[in-house]
Length: 183
Image (cartoon, rainbow, N blue to C red; front, side, top):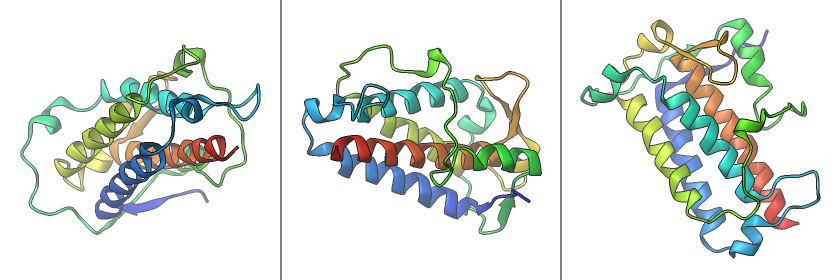
């Protein structure tokens, strides 16, 4: 079965790692490298980051507001949160190791071909938003709260599933961005 497991501490460490990896990956490259496509049908590193920003902004508008205003909880849980079966199957298709190529709706693709490196700062700010929300979420709320998908309104993810989805999706596109830069 495709149930995925991760603790809040692991989620936090993943978001911190993603933020650090993006900083290392993009801090020393030129705008030309950032925007270079490996081929006509592939995205540039810039387009990968723009896509991640668009998706994250779509979800963050559905974050539970009361969690955002709550003080940080004293400790994150090391208990394993487990996704539901169908959500786990869907999320596994977003993971870096998945070979499945999914169609990206046009509203979640970069509108410009030349993008400024400042979008990386936006990406890192989004990681901070995920970290901020995660630090204010009680373990029980990972299952009790749900967030609607901006891509398909009939899809709802538990808050824990949403964190895992974004971790996998971001890692997948960071790998794609690395490959675009190396080309």
